[in-house]
Length: 79
Image (cartoon, rainbow, N blue to C red; front, top):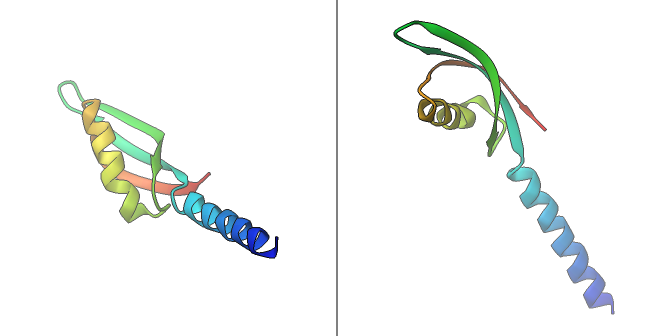
């Protein structure tokens, strides 16, 4: 019985660590389109660490798929 409780506690702890490492982040960005020039300021959810260096390529790829060019990631915050 003691072994089962320890195993369950270890599994719960591992799940908590894994879920927090893969938590979604919200990135605030500026982007543009050319011909005609259009500017956009918005937010987008990205997965992975909540740091600008990790979020920037994901934001850039998501915007490029919609025809936008990333100008700058302004802030990144965890949910």
